[in-house]
Length: 386
Ligand SMILES: *Cc1c(COP(=O)(O)O)cnc(C)c1O
Image (tube, rainbow, N blue to C red):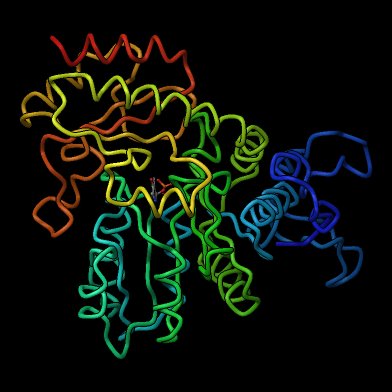
């Protein structure tokens, strides 16, 4: 979590910071790319005297580069990398105490919900999933011991959009922390800290890595006290990423901006095609004017993202069409350069079955990749019209 050379790039644009912040050429060798420091320990010249690193769970120069870069991209002062997105979220929740209460969006990543309901609730953390676009529901769920509001926007898999600045004002008036899972939008499209959030969490496995070849997570905050607490937990719990994994995420970050532009353009083309297909009942995409969160998304996001969900006329059609894609690959996860299709009810969100977060059985989710849009649209026609 060292600041390193980050300050030097403060005034630079997003794409420049993605390539340079925390990533100066190696001072010893001149290597242009931050090396993979595959070492578990670091020499000390005297007891307690070292170059800034002692043991690799506590810190590693490759990891520091990623932490500096992601903090810069989110506009925050402190970044921390974790072994997965869920590990980053876990550190944030461990910052709370038994008896504390969290209000969370009623449509969150299934694994996030599972962590609340089956891990942290066992240690006395109370929580309520709420439709965060409904102010009355939010006020009704709020308790004197509510210490955190957990927002995901756009949500996975229903692509609901919540107003971060409005929700942050509500929570801050009541002395609660505001956490935003920014995995779907990425800092290229949405910067929650600037909208009032206290902490941003990421599954770096998705768009930040961008190539479906690594599992990782990160969090960013500007609050020094929170950063210190999370850094303590990162080291004390130990859910840290290895140097090769952070190297891959760093490499992904360099192209984040151009990839997100291509994802958004392709998603727009896919949405337009889906709207013409009789097999499709409803298209869920915040870029659509009829989407209930469209106005908020247009205000708080630079573009509408690469995730598209749609409902078919019945569950059977949704499940059957998933197996007929040839360019889209049937797989969990999202945010890679290749297009993926999945059935959330039976795949990523199975853990929400029977809960208030259960997703519709006729729902199909697309992670629109950056292949040629014409090939993606032809594949949709072939898979859905069978
Ligand atoms: C995948 C995902 C996570 C969990 O991240 P992992 O890296 O799989 O642990 C959290 N939030 C969202 C929105 C996700 O899509």
